[in-house]
Amino acid sequence: MVKEVDYIVVGLGLAGIAFAEELIKNNYSFIVYEDCSQMSSKVAGGVYNPVILKRFTPVWNGHDQLVYALPKYEELENKLKIKIDSKFKTRKVFNSIADENNWFVALDKPSLSHYMEPDILKGKIEGVIGNFGFGELKGTGRIDTEKLIFNYTKYLRGIASIKEEKFIHDELIIEEDFLSYKGIKSTKIVFCEGFGIKKNPFFNDLPLKESKGEILTIHSPELKIDFLLKSNVFVMPLGNDYYRVGATFNWTDSTTTPTKEGREELESKLKNVISVPYSVTNHTAGIRPTVKDRRPLLGKHPKYSNLAVLNGLGTRGVMIGPTMAKMLFNHLEKGGVLEKEVDIYRF
Image (cartoon, rainbow, N blue to C red):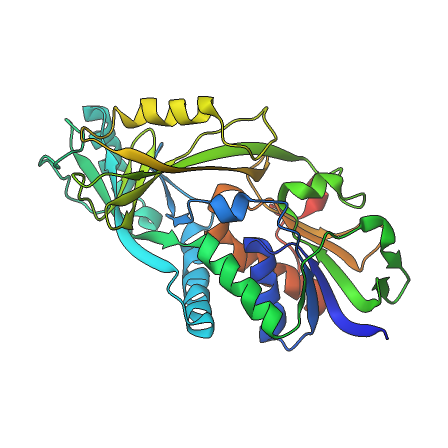
C-alpha cells in the first residue's frame, strides 16, 4: 500500500526539526528519514549569542534570527513537555587593555548595544583567570540540542512520521509531478543531511566543508559560575558543577571519533582559563557542515525542482535554523525569494 505525504525530509538535526516544524505549522504531511549517521547537532554546544566575541562584531542577521528562533524553542518545550532553553549571561575574558577599548567602540553600534553591558566587570571571579576584566553579554543562552533531538524523535514516532533507517538516494524515483521512495509517494523532498550531503548524488557538488569539533564535559565543584565564560575556549554551565568546554576546529579529520589530540588541545587551553581542579567526565566529537562564506545552503535542484536542500547551518545552527527553514518553506510553497546570501545558486 502506497503512503502519500507532501514531503520527505532526510535528516533530523537542527535543520530537519526546524523544517518539520514549518510543515506542521502549515498543515503539510511528511515523513522523516534519520539514521543517526551525523552527530553535529547532537554534540553541538547549542549556544546562542548574536555577538562575535573575537572581534566584537554582530553575527549576520543575529538579532532577527533570535527574535524568530527563541519563541520557536519555547513552543517546542511546551509541545514536548521538556526544558531545553537555558538562559544565561556570557562573560568575555579581556586579555589586554585593547580588548576593553574595542568593547566600548562596539557599544556604539545599535545592533550590539542591545546585548552588551556598558560596564566592564573588574572584580576577580573565583577560579577564573582574568587580569584585565570581563565584558558581559545579556540575552544569550543554550539550547540542549541532544535533548531536543531525542524527544523530537519520540514525538515523530508517536505520530508515525519517522523512518529510522538509512535513506538510499539511488532508490528515489523522480517523476515530473511526484516522487516515490520505498512505498512512499510525495510531492517534494528536502535534504537536511549535514555533512552527509557529500554522499548525496543530487547535491554533493555544493561547497560544503567538514569542520570537526570536539567538546569536553568536566566536573569542577570549586568553579561555581552560572554564566558562559568565553576565552580561547568556552566554559558553559550545565548545572550541578558540570561544565561543557569547547571547541576544537579540525579541517582534515572527517571522523566523529574523539581524539587524544583534541582532548589535549582543550585541556591545554582550559588551564589558561580556570585555576581550579576539574575532572573530565565526557568527550564527544562531531562534524560541522560549514561553507566557505559562512552562509547556509538553501534552494532547489537545478534540474529537479521538487528536490531541495537545507544545509550548512554551521556553528550557529540553533540561531539560524528556524529562520532558514521558514525561508525555504516560503520559497517552495509560496514563491518566496531566497536571499542571495543563502541561495545555492550564488556559487
